[in-house]
Length: 405
Image 1 (cartoon, rainbow, N blue to C red):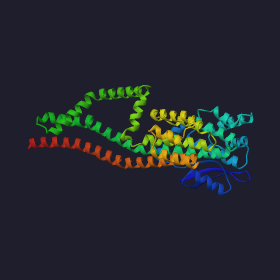
Image 2 (cartoon, rainbow, N blue to C red):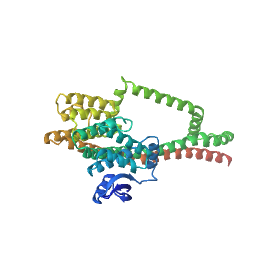
Image 3 (cartoon, rainbow, N blue to C red):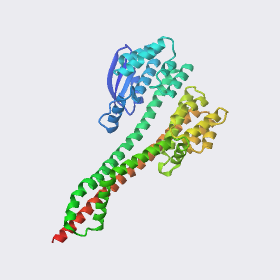
Image 4 (cartoon, helix red, strand yellow):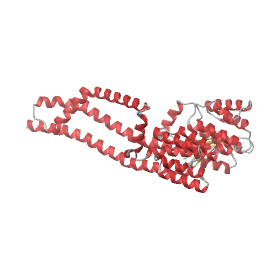
């Protein structure tokens, strides 16, 4: 993968170029070997569906995730090189080619020069930086290790975004494929079949059962298709309202969490974000109960969120994290076991991050296996449906031709 970069050499000159590396972190390591202080590192991937989607989404937001990653890692590199915080922010503002980053860095620099801590300055931009980000910066400042904390934070944000993008990218192709085949079926039923219906009516021949069934289906779709679509839309709205209902939504979330057809993907992906946030915050010096409180914001499934809140409350009473995760009975067993080992060995923070990595790998493997079956199944199933529709029409045409002879 190609990455473009901007960096400062020992003489203070800004340099730009490209490097080929497997990840952004590898580019930063290589720039360090070249004795360059990175200011901005960006992937040059283009032409793929996901890349174009990311570009479209970034236009609708002031800052995309990749901008936050580049800003965080660039600031960490400048601080590790010995620059003071306000000077580092000034350099990032001067060298960035995005107006949103320049405006942000300039405002942060102004607040820092006025005597504000970096964490407090970030807190005024909560629409850009999430709560866990600000908390980790506060912890780094209190512990006197802001540069190291920012470096870990940048890697954390980059890895979380990579997992999220991988899931979205994996689901794009099956969704497009299913939509296109469904559109083809609707066009066959509503556009193609009516043209042959006139021929069949004029022939006054007894059509085969398959042809009559397809013609009846076409008539139904033409006559009631809009009503069916409206009913489906109304059902979707009612389901969405039920989902938001505090009395019904959590029970639906629990059923989905435990459903076999989800293959544990929801539990694994959300638990991964939850544990990775706790581990990263704890490594930055945040106490475990406070880290757990911040990590609650990473959970969307309300069944998991309720269990995590119970874990948080009992952590404040001094109970072990692994025992509480096990007692909740909704978190993956692999995460519970690694948390228990971490507590026994005194390496809880590291093993929580390792547990998150393990869950991400398992979720990725499960998703790959599902897609390897789902895509051919959709292709074959929908192709067979279209072939059956066409075959039924051909059988009817042949029956008319037999009568003519």
